[in-house]
Amino acid sequence: GLTLLVTTDPELIKYLNNVVDQLKDWLYKCSVQKLVVVISNIESGEVLERWQFDIECDKTAKDDSTPREKSQKAIQDEIRSVIRQITATVTFLPLLEVSCSFDLLIYTDKDLVVPEKWEESGPQFITNSEEVRLRSFTTTIHKVNSMVAYKIPVND
Image: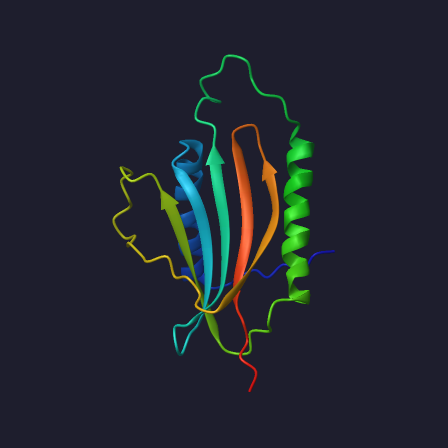
């Protein structure tokens, strides 16, 4: 089985539900170019990991009168494969031995109206990092390429 951590913090649940609802809407409208999860050291603010999911959307797919064929099982199998690869990254990612926080960055079309309580952010790149490309998956409308960048540990 797969270990899954679930938050019990009501504020975090509210935040994640808000982000996911907005993300679903934007994905449906083909307005998202990438989703990034940034993991940072709470004390220093230094970015330690940056998980990037590049999203290509076929905007003509919704207009086509002939639906594209790809079974839900095939899509789910590809997503499972990416999730397995993400969980396997523990074998090479440096151990996070400090208290960390995360941030979600959503890159959208420039003309998109952003919700009021959301704020603009920089890309939060990692200096002195290593990057690993992960598998991609496709639906009938989206193609998602994934990668992780992580801070190269400094040997004392």
